[in-house]
Image (cartoon, rainbow, N blue to C red; front, side, top):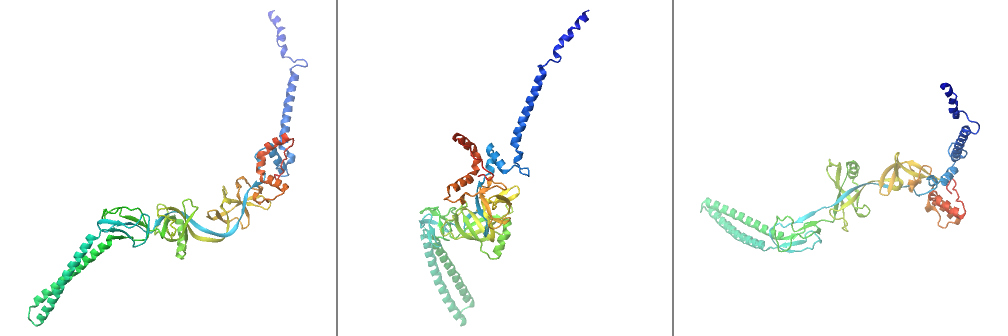
Length: 466
């Protein structure tokens, strides 16, 4: 009985799970699906509007006007990329391009002499001023000559005595020879006298050598300049006792005119240099200051070393300079430029126009429609702000020299410097649009806001950015 009583209760507990009459959960589910479908349709419509397939050209790309307008409306970077970019241009010209080897060099004097005394004595006087330019043979200092003068006088007295003895010995020899001819004396006595004469002759010759020595000492007592040049700082003062063994000497004398510059270059440049030297060409060398901007002196290549340094693979060269104005100073660091050869009728462009990329060296060539194209070129010798083009560019073609960082293949350009200064209002507006087109995208938001405040809508640029 209990089981029978429980069965009727089971359907009553399961009653809520059975289908409900109209207005229950089923209508709410259908309404949710409709809302989801509407959201999907709205998203698809927005995507379709942004895509704008009807504004694409036959090749499948968006038309320039639509793309430009979209970029301007959205304020993206494309708003600036599609505008004519202000650049500076130059024309490739034909001219002579020098082949120059640039190297760091050191100014080296042809002669640098430490003036020392060659005898011992008291330094009486110094006849130069520090930093003075002197000539070869000028007296620089004087050593007390009195001891050497006394020695000279003594040697001259000795010579006079020995010359008198020699004269007496020669007279006696002459008499002995006469007596020997008369057979009045022995021949041994004549031979002895003859030897005595030769002995006195040797003594006289020795005395003369002593005299010459003391005269030379007197000459050394006057210290003169061995070369022409500039004296340095005085190393010893008058009154000091100087000797030939003094390390510092009296003064250092350096030759400044002419002067040389020693610099090094790679062994790879040696064949072209030797070719010019064998042909007898006098290659010019220019010395610039440390900043490599100011020309100090011009000279010529004098010689080069006889061997290559195996540790660096370089060879030393010496250039000679007249240095008339003293612009080159000993041990000064300079930038030496050696002119090896000159290429005639070369295509020359400004160095700033030549760029380097992953595919090599290239330039931006300006086309007649005021657009640019990338042109790969082969670079020749470079001379500071000028670069020669071996191939890839013709004389007369215009290239971009400044502003190339904002360019790409096919970019439109404008040259601000080419605008007339007395342009009319319309031309001025056009120039403002072309010259300031690169800033239009960046300022579009601010212009739109300003126009909204004034009740005007900003004008959307066309495909050319105008």
